[in-house]
Length: 387
Image (tube, rainbow, N blue to C red; front, side, top):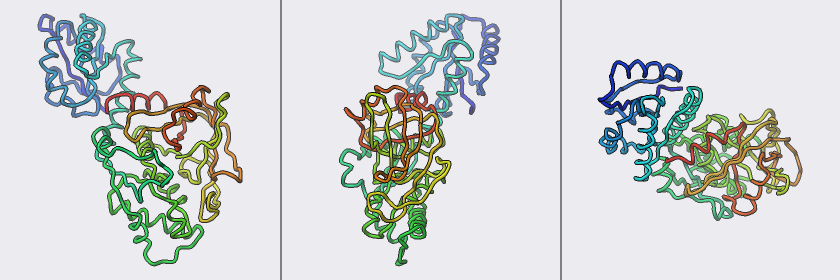
């Protein structure tokens, strides 16, 4: 955990020496790395996570005078309380005032263990949100024609996430390839990988989504291997020009530091919650082993048949206008290799089988992001709070 900045509110009616001793005891019990700024709020909001320790009651008016300064940071206002000296009562009054003014806040109160865990979660989310700001993501060649619901609101994404979406012509990839005759197998797929790396460098991107099917007609090859490698190298590299999927992958990368598998459901048992997801590429850092095959729909180029380890997984998708999202945990039961589907095939059992109805009644497009682990709690915190 990085250092958390803590600022204090104290009524003048209380003895400072007594309150200071109580403060040291309370903060030590939380076992967090912190910088204590007392009543000096001049640096409030500069750290990823700032807390206001309401040390005593009678501090509501003090907070009200500070709110114009505090509220400019657009961070949720987090009120830390030990429960002594009427600090909880004052925090409740402050939080009620915030809610009346449509501002987001939370009281951190409970056992030291609970408060420590909650601060750890909030700090991790705050750091992830800060990572997103200033990120540049490329849309190379625009979304595929069949992705009729998978665009994004550029202004909303810039304002709420701090991400700049950059339109890039597919011609830049072809130009980076030069006049070289592209091999139809692995060697040609590696040339596409190098060309995409050049575009990423030229535009200073942290990720992109590629209108990859156009490569089939122009180059008689695919971007599947390139995307698999680039994701494994720490970039976000999505398929078919799907912008919401790319944004979802970027959120996963910023929050957990891991790759996500962009796949589409191929079969769902709405009664049991078991579903099969497939695609012709998967980040190579997500698999225990993989094989090279052809691209499924075209039968040409290079596709990836990857095998993810069995265990807990999470499915995630963020809408392109950030208006809604989907998160569900489950277990990866097995990987398959059916000849009539995209090459990487994962069978997932949803923890809550009723969540399968989402895919049949109000899905956010077809692609969803699969990641290893129990990630729902932090993802919910990330997308439900103020961006």
